[in-house]
Image 1: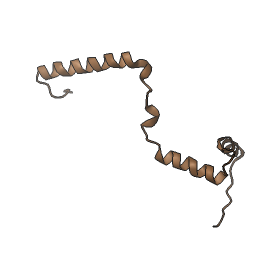
Image 2 (image 1 turned 180 degrees about the vertical axis):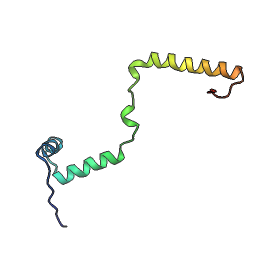
Image 3 (image 1 turned 90 degrees about the vertical axis):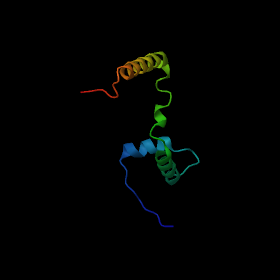
Image 4 (image 1 turned 90 degrees about the horizontal axis):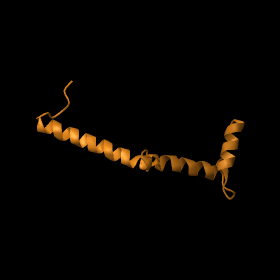
Amino acid sequence: MTQKTISLPEDVYKKLKEEKKDDESFAQLILRLLKKEVTKSPIEPLAGVFAKEADEWAEIEKTLYTDRLRQNERGIDSIEE
């Protein structure tokens, strides 16, 4: 297997070194980080973000539902501009 040398700014090297596990090479670290980035769901970081505001969201949902019911009762299928 061939090897390549890459140049990194000092600050990037320090950040990589902080992320590197004791039993891990830099190549393994980079592969792990790349895999983590590729497999991460774009919505995953948002999981639970609104948990603290659950009551507020419940009220918003109730308001939206009520407004939609009123629109349907008046025969409005969509919001007119």
